Every structure is written in structure tokens, then in C-alpha cells.
Image 1 (tube, rainbow, N blue to C red):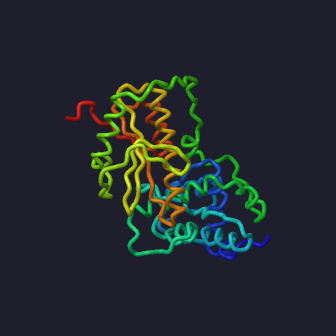
Image 2: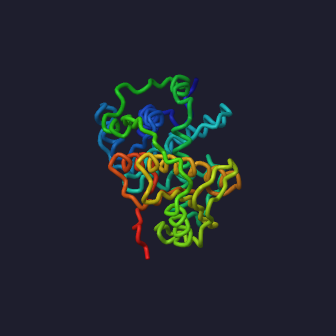
Image 3: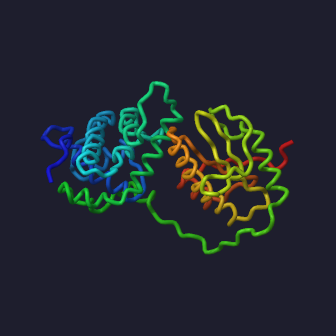
Amino acid sequence: MELPESLNGKEWTPATARRMFPLLVWCAQNGVTITYGQLDKELQRRGWGDHVMEVKYGSPAGAVGDACQEMRTTQGERIPPLNAILVNAKSGIPGTGADYYLASYLGKRRSKIVTDVQRKAMAEETMEEVWQFQKWDSLLKRYGFKPLKGGIPSLRSKNSRRERQPERSWSNEAESKQHKALKKWVSKNPDVLGHDIPYSSGKIEWQFASADRVDVLFKHKKGCAAVEVKASNANLADLERGIYQCVKYRALLRAELKAEGKIPNGLSILVTEKKLPPRLRVLADLHRVPVIVVPVNRA
């Protein structure tokens, strides 16, 4: 099948975009992002290009985004913009040049009043869609691209599977006084979240459309925050479960915001009275779950 128009040509931009495409597909299939600097080094390592200033990759990144849009139009498939996982090293999200592709894919109109927080939410939502898309291999084959051989060594550590702990001794006792007290305190102290959105008091035991309940939910027209709390009596298995609950609540919150036609600026936070051990800290970072440790004696 003929290549999308934006990937055709001998000029530097389409030629670089064609080389980038399999690299970005590998990242998509392995659930990782890649920075402009890492991309530049990998292209050089493979002998596919010389060093250029990172800002120059904006053009081929846009060509990849245009190609995904053309694929959506011609094939009638919901193909996410692959350039969404090419990110700025400092912010962890794509540059402003990708705003058009994020908004187009999510069905949002571009607006000058979109905040940095909303941009981040749109970017993270789109990146999740890129990672979850299951037809990257068929697209490579359809357009004559070869799957990447050898992977990207500099990103392997981000993709290494960590051994799961066999223990799952979650507490099955009734809700403790410590847990109730922490929920109540968090609901009345939104400042503890350290967020720019001026949340008012939160709702305790908020129920999602799925019937799942989150400990505390903060709502605002600019975005929402779901908070899972773990008191000082939580064991390690409970803390691990709390991280995965945050992953679930973030997905549910963003799904409901999307259903309401809003920018999916929903995040989830784990607030705990216990410091996480290194293994769980790594797990929280892996799933982008913010963790806030508060003192037991807060008076």
C-alpha cells in the first residue's frame, strides 16, 4: 500500500519520519515514551542519521502525526497519533507542536485558554491510547516498514519486568478508625494535594458509574482528583493494592470526563501515613501514581 503523503519524499523531514516510525512503534508496544535526545542518539547509533538539534525533530514528528491522521481517514480505524509518545525530557509530555494532534484525536477544539494541566491530561490520555493500540504490527506490514530489531537499549530498563510479590495478604477487617479519620482529614484539606486547581472540600466515598468507590473525590471545572488513602495500620500488600486502585480510579475518572465531553483532566493520588518501601516507590513511579506521605499526628 502506498505510504501516507507526509512520509513520502527524499527530503530530510519525510526520510527521518520513516526512520522514526518503527522506533516509535517499538516504544508504543513496550509501553514507554522516548525523548527527543534519546531519539537522536538512537538514530545515530543505528547509522540512520547524523546529530541534529532536538528542536528539528518537530517537523518529522508532525509528519508521523499527519500520517496517523491520514491512516484514520483512509482506513476508517481509530489510529492514535504515534508522535504523542515522543516527549520533552523535562515535562514528560510532547511539545506544544503536538497539541493539534492530541486535540484532533480526542475530539477537542483547540483553545487558547487550555492550561498546562489540561495539556498534560490530554497528552497522558493520548499516550495511553497509543500504548493500548493493538494493530501497530499490521500497520508496519501494510506500509512496508520492518519491525525494529534489537529494541532500543537505552530504554530497556524502563521496560524490564519486575517480579511480582507472591504475598497478597490484604486486610479484610472492617474499616479502621485511622482510615476513617484520614479520609475525613484529606477531604477537608485539599491543599495537601499540592495542586494548582483551587479545590474545595472533597466528597467521601464517591461512587463511579462502574459502582467502584474512591475514598475521596475532589471536583472542579478545571479537573478532578481521586484520592485513595492508606492509614498507618495498612500493611505492604494494602499499600500495593492502593497503587493499583489509583490506576483504576484514574482510568474511570478520565472515562467519565470524556463521556461528559470534557477534557479528561482526571488524576489519582495515593495519600498515606506510611512511607513506601523502595519496591513500591518504583511501582508507583512506573504507573505515574503520585504519592503523598502525611504525618500521623497532624494537629
